[in-house]
Length: 182
Image (cartoon, rainbow, N blue to C red; front, side, top):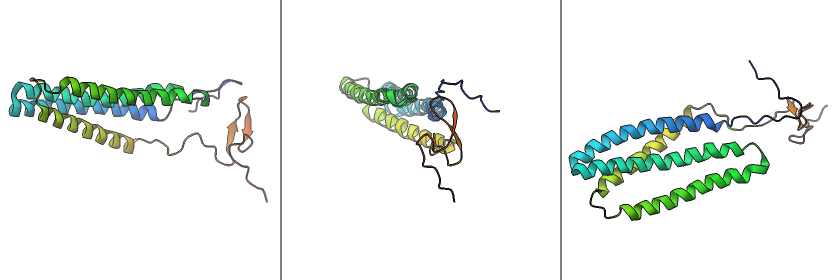
């Protein structure tokens, strides 16, 4: 069952194909973080006592927060991806979130450095486990997604809608050259 075409003069702003992939990556990333927090907390408690448990939980939380900032910023920025006029907002949101992550990381390193209730080795390994785990989740989710390599393409012979909402032959909008006829 297909969706009806938009009314004349109305443009449809479809959901970008990356939204389900990012939501799945967030969901599975949070589940993995819970597993990492439990395992790292147990190992941190065995090897470093209470500071090890606290460090494992903080390290895992940092990995989740940084992973989440990226995914949430892209999900938020996708609201601006529908038109060429607002593409600057898309890239501003994504780049701003990366800058926020960099500044946040530097501040957290300065604040947490030398704290007596932190075990730096346990925290380091829990951060590494969280980062590698989130990368693995991203790869698995992306490989299992059915996301097309190319989107918004009109093939020769397909009917395209021009800006007025009327059907026109492909190539008439200037997107693709019309095929020569013999």
